[in-house]
Image 1 (cartoon, rainbow, N blue to C red):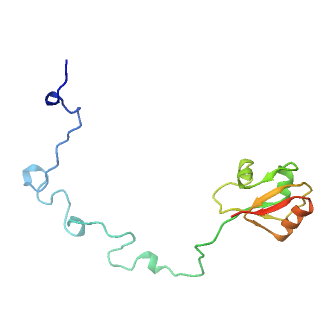
Image 2 (image 1 turned 90 degrees about the vertical axis):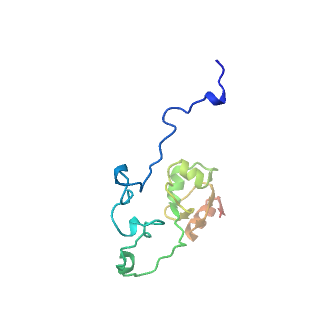
Image 3 (image 1 turned 90 degrees about the horizontal axis):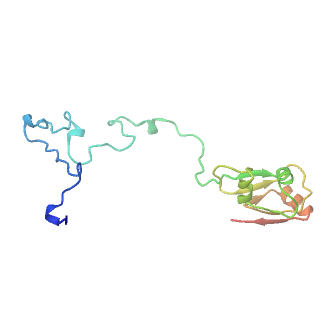
Length: 151
């Protein structure tokens, strides 16, 4: 059987009747045309007020007192101590954010890794991080390792 364009039919459920509103009470969609009662939401256009609007009353976000200082450009660093590197890495290995995440020492969202100098380090490691404390840098270099700051 050959199918021709004039004999093709749409699959069942593909064509849906349009809802005709405002065509008299007997249609079931008359009077308010499915818009409910009166007021802002019954009007055409953008019937939804903006987020946080409370009908003209001073909104909550303006009623609350604003105190202190919020630094929106603050960077959050994942912090790792030198003694953690000593326990988790073998001599000669490279330490970077990817390897720290792989070993489960850093998790969650962070703008980079910062190495701090708590503990002792005796292994020669190549450490790549966003930042180092002075004592951490000193301990890594004293153990024969190298420090590399990455952006």
